[in-house]
Image (cartoon, rainbow, N blue to C red; front, side):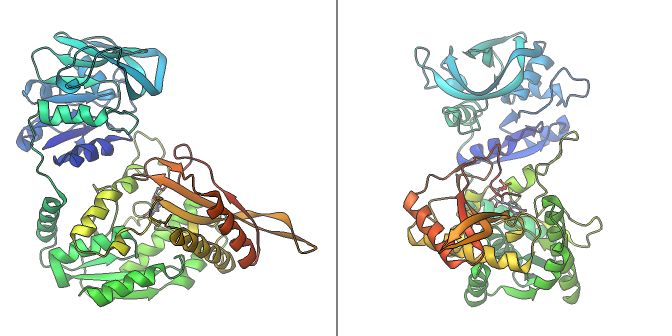
Length: 510
Ligand code: XMP
């Protein structure tokens, strides 16, 4: 297995994912994991992640320099590379020119992590994101590649299995990223590709059984892929000890969750209870326009209702949730840096929650979850459902959420879904949905002036929700959607298309 020491980078999870895509198990630990613990884990290799700090800061996060003496291969990435240099006697300073985005890499040594690649005139596109720069190599090291602003863009130790890169091999914009990681894990660490979804199920089922023992678990079934797969996986582990609770928060898309509920009831032996809490949620959201406040109230409401239901069931100890990597990563606070959004599954949990959490998908990305779902026997229709946020339509209505606004958004949303499905676009894009704006604009219908709502269509392409680009969908499709919404939905006289990417925007509007 490969051990990743996390220094707080937004892309640490991607490193793990890229390695697992190569069927090599990898796990993430905090940067200060004690040396003794590292030894007992017996990793085949260690990756030091990037991070937002500077190695010369007084409170810079540092790992035990003893890891360089273990004779275990180490790959330092960005901050990890700088830390390796600093701890072994090199020098890192603030760069005169910061380097963000694409850069051209010139390889000088075509072995090690660059095996199979070529020296100039061939250049390779890599992705950089750093404000500090390695100014002096530690003894025993040599540069293996450079970029216009980084003479030491990649390094290796002449005798020890220590390598480092200033660029980020884990992101898609580094076109040779996969090759670099493959060369490290297979060539340098000598791993074999034997970790699969099948083995993930085995170990996770085992873990859940061990943790749960004879206790009972409830699961928050929402109808989405994540919670469906969670339920199926936990059910596989402990069978009847699991009860699923479906809370209708009144913020669901029309007809969506019903179809999944039907599936579980008809095709599996899973126990499902459903609770209609529409009135409660609408009441909680009355007069609330702030997005974070809405997210927190909806998140809190969920937990509260689960607890109430759990109590009715008698002795229940655990709550299983379909929290994924992206949900976790953006809520992580690093040294006081604000989280981007309080994700529904993580933010707003009451302090004294009476249920312990089981989150078997916590380390997986969406496409891994889909693969897992198919492996568990869930139907394709449930697996290829587009992601839908926990707070539901509540964060797709800008401003206050009311029954009337929900009604408008639902009608528009159904039209969007319907047209996307009809044309086969539904599965081609990551998400496609409608957003109701809190403004009114002037229009003309018949001979009369109108002053009504605006619907925005949001549609993005993405691999994992970490980054996304607006989808270049067919103009005619957009035209048909616009026509239908304006004609069929009372109270809407304008439709616009969102052409922002993530970052700097996010997929959802709130
Ligand atoms: P953003 O808007 O942060 O969304 O770019 C990234 C992905 O996450 C979904 N999303 C959520 N999922 N609970 C969830 O389970 C949430 O609170 C939540 N907020 C956003 C969003 O639909 C997109 O796929």
